[in-house]
Length: 94
Image (cartoon, helix red, strand yellow):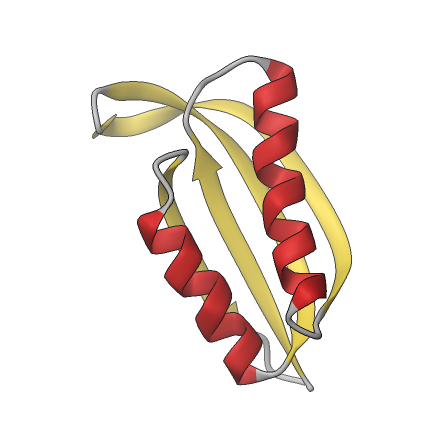
């Protein structure tokens, strides 16, 4: 198992919808055999440039322990999700 940082920007929406998106990805990690060590919600921030006609986004950082296959599945789902503006997954050195 390896440690990863998963950061993503959720489109601006109501608080309940944003919570549902974050919960969707934490459950996806758990379903594929990984664990979410910590969840850090940075909140709504103004973007440096417009992305998909949005000037604001809700930032979330997840620290995850998982196998590479789990991270590949999370990345695949994030790429096709309409609720996200951007995402990035980085392996953390031990």
